[in-house]
Image (cartoon, rainbow, N blue to C red; front, side, top):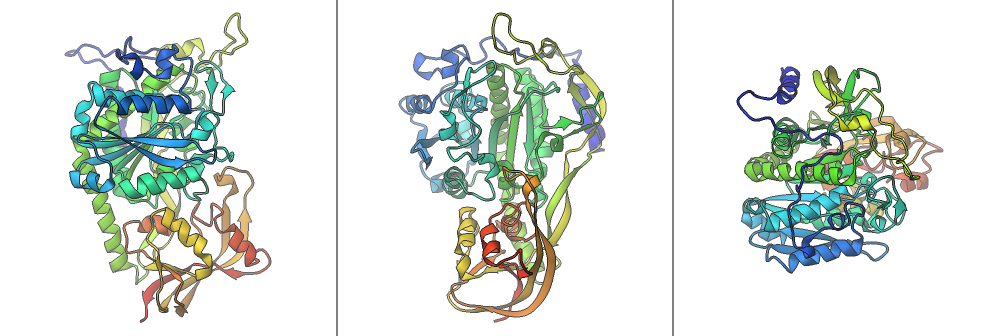
Length: 564
């Protein structure tokens, strides 16, 4: 039923109603004239000042934020982190009345939303769209959003990469790098938290402000589909299903229709195809969006919260890409303002449900959760595609290759009956215990958990428990880099029962009767796809234990019952 309704909704949306004037759809590089309005010079962004030939430097982002706070009493500026190169990463809190602390936000009852741009500085359109939106929210037609929302905006998340410039095709002419000053991809650090940047995001935004919804803006490469933006939610099967399903089943269809009606753009799921014509598969797995938690938006879903990542096509000009993010974020905020209480209730219920499940089902071993997943089909769907490849020629009289092939400026074809491979399902599972115990010498693991906001207790006295322990017979390691699926650590072995064991004072205890139980489980389970083991956090410990030379016991104990 879902797949038939999904295809029908998308098809019907492209047919003009006889009783309503047609909505112009902007294809290719087109945007509505004057879409960004008229503003005084101090509130113009760098792209607006330069005919969309440049993106803002770190200094120019700070100057724009400074202009906002000197022009409005609804702005609070906070520091997310100070980078290794001593650059400040600012976030702007927009609220009416102004709030400066998380407890003030909680007391207001308003829905907290976090918006992020430039985690990859060679994808700057989200940064610029967020600056424009902050201007519109404070002084323009979106001021009513602050009646229901507290909006935290971090437009320039990777500050060190932002000013590491190189030449680009098209606009903007200069782009930042894809990594931080340590050459690390920040959107692969959501589990390991090796970077100052992601640690600051967790400590100062996620852990303190607890946003109900986050939005992370990106850019993809050249594509053959006809969508101005592609969105995706958390697809980690271990995450609570209710917040994930709500984003996919309710928020996305509503926002998709609103973007079409109000901005004249077609948006859809962030996906790729199987490179056939006509395509037979459409799904996020074809677009490098895996079921793993290494991405910030995926990891955030393990907190029982809602998350969105969106990517606009890379072959389109800078103004069009900014407009696409502007439209999608604006309508996402509009939806959150209208449905924020419902969204809060779903997330708080997921918190309570996981705690109750741990308390009532974990001791018997019947409570289970997923450690790995894959994508299956929702059924057939109709998608907008271009048949011809997106290859462009050099701009006449220049040594610059144009970003957009001419046929990409026209309307795409509607390809019917494509397999919609976007349903995240679990493939491997493990028992979810009452908790985990970690020897005192592995405080680095306890500290990593605390950065994730998982509650970790240091035992004041010995604790006797029963449970099981994982015996590692072999460690497999793939090849490659970037914490991606092809270089994950994979353990071979199995669980052995441990009827009784006593842990001394000073050991670390993680009681899963807490709202972040799914996150703690995913991080600590020895065979999670990219938990602490899979992403390499335990590598140094395994080396000390000589894991490659003999069988060893995984140094995190899984307990089901406290015996004293």
